[in-house]
Image 1 (cartoon, protein in one colour):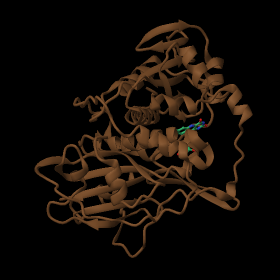
Image 2: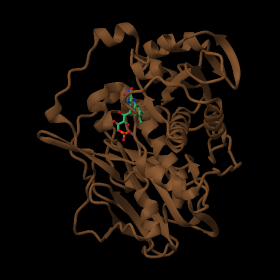
Image 3: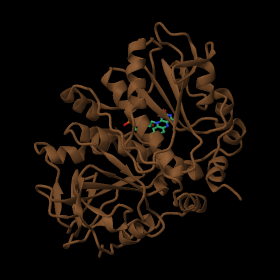
Length: 424
Ligand SMILES: Cc1cc2nc3c(=O)[nH]c(=O)nc-3n(C[C@H](O)[C@H](O)[C@H](O)COP(=O)(O)O)c2cc1C
């Protein structure tokens, strides 16, 4: 039987030849707007920096910088995004949350506000479509992707970026929740098609995952009587991405991760880090210490609470770390000794970030459940950004790499999900 998961991944591999044979010419004037904006007549709550709960929401993808070029301005956010295209949308259900009527909300990033989409009746809730349908007291986030925002530039490969960006969103929720001593529980086991329909997504937007920061009670949700309209512009559809989504929707043999290991940072400093996070554009080529790398690795390896945890391996190429041999490592083991800095940069589509970093990471998986595995790689990537920033280092995600050549270099037949570079 054909394995669809590998089919999509294989279909979207980059190689030296594919990049040159099939270059992408972009029509910048056609770039989609990276914001979804619901009707202004809906009840809207402007997020207020003085309110801790509002800050909690703001940290999940809120705007933290603005760049202005002649004729264009664009906004950067707490989450990084491949090409700054931001294909992920964030909704949440609030139940028994102070200052929020029980209901379903959309985070309107452009206006730094939330809008009430639907008020909840008694026994009503999105949990009715979850495998565990106990009502959550507190916040339950739902993350979707408007894939065309990314496909416009990255074409078929965009589904990978949507999954990674969504994983980064898990990372911001986790970080934001930890500041209040809440755990963030990632959930994949819910009826996404039913929720796509209730939210009126049509074919151009779909749910990828949920993150719960509230706690389940004993009551269950018995219905959801919501039928929103499709407000997305009529984006061009992409059959490969839609098929990849549907082919990887059904999860098999999920393993729960119940272990929780909170961060050990100074909270005030960590909060600043969440707002300050940026992608580094150029490294100085200076080394980092082994202690720094150890702290990074400790955080990458912390378990992620999830109802469908998939193994993700973190290979890393040490280019410049004081007191360590240069080479390729996995789980603290030196697999190959040598200066692979040029090789690492080459594998990242000849991007200097990969060769001038102190360490370049490659995340891989042989997972059966493609969507959870890919989002987990994004989540780990977000931790890497935050720990690096906390240590005063720079980090950048790298979604463009030569897939097969990277796998050959690492000596694995697993899928290459993500690369990231860290350094001074
Ligand atoms: C999944 C993903 C892939 C990315 N790939 C690359 C890349 O290949 N090369 C690069 O220079 N930056 C890459 N970036 C960084 C983005 O360009 C950056 O996040 C975006 O421009 C927004 O800037 P900021 O992270 O500073 O807020 C990637 C980011 C993400 C999340």
